[in-house]
Length: 269
Length: 255
Ligand SMILES: Nc1ncnc2c1ncn2[C@@H]1O[C@H](COP(=O)(O)OP(=O)(O)OP(=O)(O)O)[C@@H](O)[C@H]1O
Ligand SMILES: [Mg+2]
Image 1 (cartoon, rainbow over the protein chains, first blue to last red):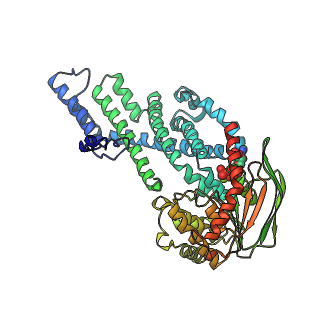
Image 2 (cartoon, rainbow over the protein chains, first blue to last red; image 1 turned 120 degrees about the vertical axis):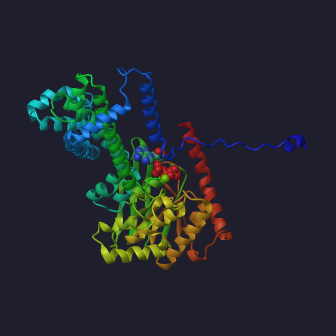
Image 3 (tube, each protein chain N blue to C red; image 1 turned 90 degrees about the vertical axis):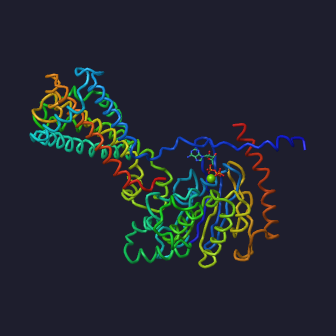
């Protein structure tokens, strides 16, 4: 045997197959938040960070409590949430329907895809004055702005998702003589659902941004108005309290979609 | 019901894929289609089932399918084509719901086909929980549920490992022996062809023409793995195909 010596020297094969597979690490996110807040608190308490740069997290919490006990929190939040819910529901539902039509009919696709591409890059806030004229100065224009902003990304995500439905499944449906409506309802829609939901994640974040923008430009109450007022008075505590509410809103929306995904997409491998 | 293919021609653009295919698919028999890769077997099967329109010629149904037949020409696909979001029984009920069959009647059909494919215990499982062999048995159960007059199978076993393939071949033979069905079975595996085919149609390389039709008289139930006479037939088929396959391979390289 030529490599007797090589056989004697044995070495374990090292494991190198780890990583690249997302795992659920439940509390990591919360710990990151907590660490940042603690660092800010310690920094401001010791004077390492000046009070003009960053408000004390504890002061922000106090402002938040004032807001809560004065009852204004619910007034702001209630209005904002109803605007968000109505606007986003309008935009997302019209967006999903139009996206599905684009995915299914080539004439609608040929007619609408360029149109969607043309309105996608328009900053929707720039159109607020127009919406005010069309839909009125109060709630109407805000609903329209949020709906319009959610509409375009939802359309694009939806027709992409419909295009990506496994063709062999559709062919299977045809080969069993299923009706057109059954194929759409039982094969195309569920097959497109993963793409539609991940599109909604983005659309809803955009909806929150537009909500604040609309409220800053013309509203008495609402989180956007609250932040704007605090900002113009350089009241950093109140500004941050408002921002925290927005972040919580974002986390909440994302969590709701995760729950929906878990319920609807359990079949995914 | 039997099928008659009448001078089928097919081309994609300038490329002729099938030429003058005349073929009789008798009732209650399994016809295997073999031929080198790219000769148009899958295309021919799609034409037979009406998923593709031939450039020339026609496929004729001779006689009426039985009255309880929901979908006369039914496919079994190589990649199973199960809906991943539906359970085993949901996948089967998918193809009978559309014919207005619901409730107790649907239950009876589903239970029957699950029993015939030995899947009764997996009725509620999702496709992702099943092995490849089981998935194909679900697809077979789904096809049986519509009581097809002709089953069109495109390499139904080629996504499976060889042991599973043997088992599933035995299952198919058992199913056929209980109630003979008509089938067109595309395969590139000659061992499968001589086990399952009552006749074996050998196609030439592209453009696919019928090169020879081999008839096997031995009953399906009496054939088994490694029979000497089947091996001899298989060898004969291979000599027919070898030159075609080699030439087809060289053409692909030239292209
Ligand atoms: N939709 C299509 N458009 C254009 N060409 C096609 C189309 N489908 C198949 N072809 C071509 O037609 C020829 C026959 O294809 P087909 O899939 O029928 O062959 P096959 O005999 O089933 O091959 P394999 O053994 O690889 O499954 C191939 O050269 C293929 O590239
Ligand atoms: Mg093929």
